[in-house]
Image 1 (cartoon, one colour):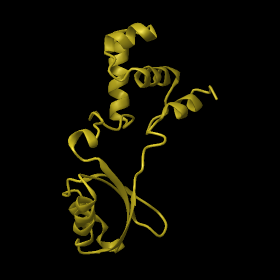
Image 2 (cartoon, one colour; image 1 turned 135 degrees about the vertical axis):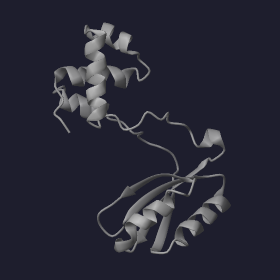
Image 3 (cartoon, one colour; image 1 turned 180 degrees about the vertical axis):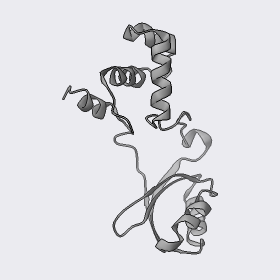
Image 4 (cartoon, one colour; image 1 turned 90 degrees about the horizontal axis):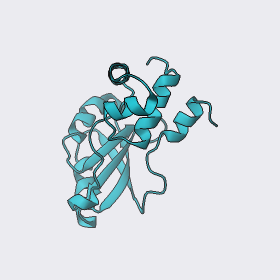
Length: 157
C-alpha cells in the first residue's frame, strides 16, 4: 500500500464525516478540483484503502436479532476448503483468521437461539472443523471505527 499524504488524509477525513459526499462536495470542502478529488479517490481505491462499498445493514432489521461470535478450531491444512464452505453459510456475516489457539473468529446473525444452535451444528459438520465455542453478543460497545487512527496519522493526537 502506498503512503498517504496530507491531502489523502484530509480527503479520507472528509469521507469519514460524510460517507455519502459527492466528488463535487468533497472538492468544494477541500478546495481541490473535481478531477484531483476523482483521481485521488481512484488511486486510493486501487491501493485498497476502501474496504467495501456495501452499505452496513442491521441484521436485526432483516429479522436476525441474535448475533454471536464463534471461536472455531480447524485442521490447518484444510483451512482454504473450510473457508470456502463457511462462505456458503448465509448466517455468517464475517470471519477473521487468528493466531493462537483459535483459528477463526466467526460472526453470525440468527433469528433465535435455536437458529444459532442449528448454524453452529452446520459449522461443526464441516469436515476439518474440530470444535467451536460460542459467545453471544450482548451489544456493540465500540463500533468499527478508523477516525482515531486517521487523527494519529494526521498528527492530531
